[in-house]
Length: 605
Image (cartoon, rainbow, N blue to C red):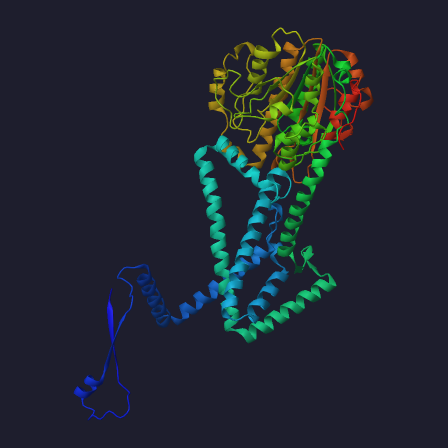
């Protein structure tokens, strides 16, 4: 450790001397201190060296240094104002949205002006972190609005982030998924660093120019109050903005309401109109029928009515209606309003089957952990049906099998598929239905069958898409190898809205064709098929103002089955009229149970 020796002149009075150099040396007190000095090449040394060079550069180039200071300050101001005025939806990100006076900027400037140095530094750091939080929730809102048609909920939606990563991995590969996850973390940290640096910079500038800054803050506050009081607007929006505080307030309220909702839903889920109905009084008018409930992924109203997608889909629905009629089947169709939008299909499935409005993950976990009667479990409870689930999208343990009342579940690994994946979908719908026929539906049994089937080929990103092949050619699915290789790349479709809409429409045509051809081929006089969509496609495909309605159809040969739902006033055929009845998806269970003779015996409450 380096030693530094310091000589201190004695100042004791009354000591004679001639003041010579020798005497001063003798009278000197030698003080030896150990001082830690930076080792050559250390971080501290390098930092001091760079600061010295920067000061030297500023001295030599005063104009360039001043220009750099002004530019840095301007960029810091732009970042802070941009964060305070940033909208939470992509369509709203327009230049005119940033021509506002944010109240949070005025208040922040006043706080910085009145605080002494150290508290001011702490306040600047906290302000920067607050801007980071605001920017993060706005970006999350953008993503959720773009894909799920709603804003981000801090109390509910963190659980969806792993699902999002799994989707990216299945769609674009593990490397892209990992890079996206790492990139998101790095982005948040980068935003935090930049925002904190910007607020510190601005607080220092305000402190150095306190008199002028105080006048500016007073003027800005006066203008803000005046514009707010008079309701003055510019480019269709208020000049006096509270966008930042308002966004955080909305998220806080959303979180509080979600926590309250969870407690209320626990009570609601315990009340069941048919909870105590004896087995013999459940579904007596369907005894002896093979009943199939099928969900088609992302089959929404937009597929039937959107100008780009509807022509092809409607043609398929009309053609399929005619083909089924020739095979002796008839259909009735209406609309259900889904509990979810753009994704989270399991919320649509559980809402339909439980009769409860399950529009978030916490509600889903609450209800599936209980014993609320699902429509599928009602069939199991009677003892008159064997109950099975066919879910090619399930690739891990699925404890909800018991809640749905399924005697047997066939997942992605139980259907014998040896062909390629089609993006997220593990196998084409046509193959999944044929495997269902071979392994389940086509086998002799002592009881009729109730089946719960989830089709996945119309899952985003709709590339590559499978195509219909001869039913006798399906084999183990290897026939789809060439089709998958020749298909479009997911990355090419995801980045193009028009292509996404076109390919989405084709995927619905494929799924509907697969299902109706299967029914033509394997349906019997006792087959009853109920099929519907789980939710609308993402907002980028369905449109920013699209509703949540999905088509639902009941198909049967036995006219007595359709007579039971005659008072529903549904449209004949597979395509519901625009003005056909619209129910909430949660209403379907009770209406179906009542239509087919079930007697209510409430429980809980």
